[in-house]
Length: 233
Image (cartoon, rainbow, N blue to C red; front, side, top):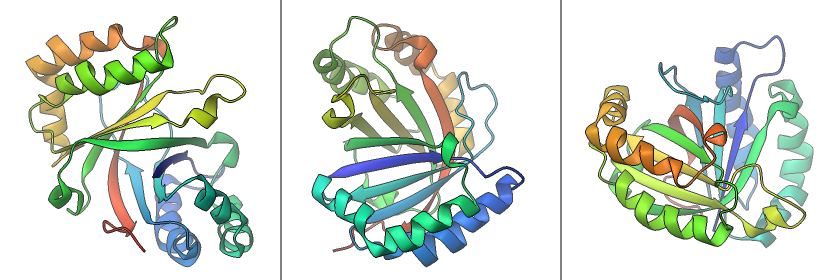
């Protein structure tokens, strides 16, 4: 299944509050949710969080689940997208500032009950492998040694690794190689995790052997289900 993540920002002159309100209550419900190929749809809105380095500037992120590449293409060719969602986007989103990543989302620490909870706090971590490391090695190490370190963080409730699809490398390098999601009960739990001995002594140093540090970006958001948490048939 494709787990697409779309980071977006408001069009010039629109406040972040109005942007988020329009996205959730107008665009998502009047347009995007009617695209039949979308199996699950979640919107994350940026939450202020002090102390992050290389923080993405975007005001929100959409998470869209599609069965496969064929259904993704069909969704982009559907009347609901072309005559609905696509035409509505310029009213609220700065398309030139949008970042889209198509990934294979793999739950490393799976908690279905928690996924169904209301408005989780999520830390997104965008990764670009260090120079000289093959994509195969990066994927293997991030899914084993790195994942094992992350899963020991105190307060972590749910953990997803999404590796960017092979198609993103067809004509060059993808901007990022993977997106992580760390789910917590609240902001204080996230703060405690980032201040913990496990993060400071194991997770943070481990990134140095895995990724290009200047391309290690973070972003904190709070999720709002539009379609889900159950997958739509």
